[in-house]
Image (cartoon, rainbow, N blue to C red; front, top):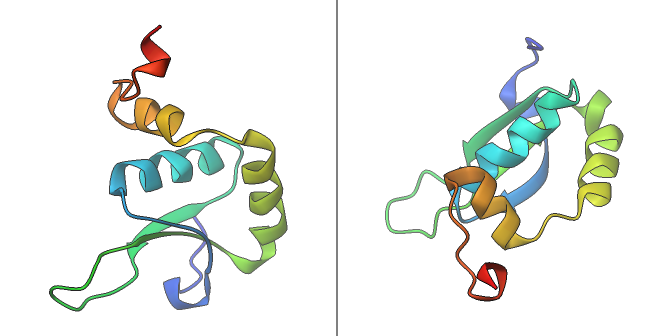
Length: 91
């Protein structure tokens, strides 16, 4: 893992579901792109978004990988928790 400070890393995705954020980070790491998942806010009561961040030198590779993967929300949820949540997926 790069020793670069978290504050210099760049966000490639912001999500409401922490499990999906960790799944995206794992997909990036499987392609040798170090990723971090951090909350976007520390304020109590504010809607919590989870950011997936990568180092600036790997930003282009991460964006290309995410654009190519085109996983649906249902597929990301399945990868995160192992359950399909859409009735259309169960047919």
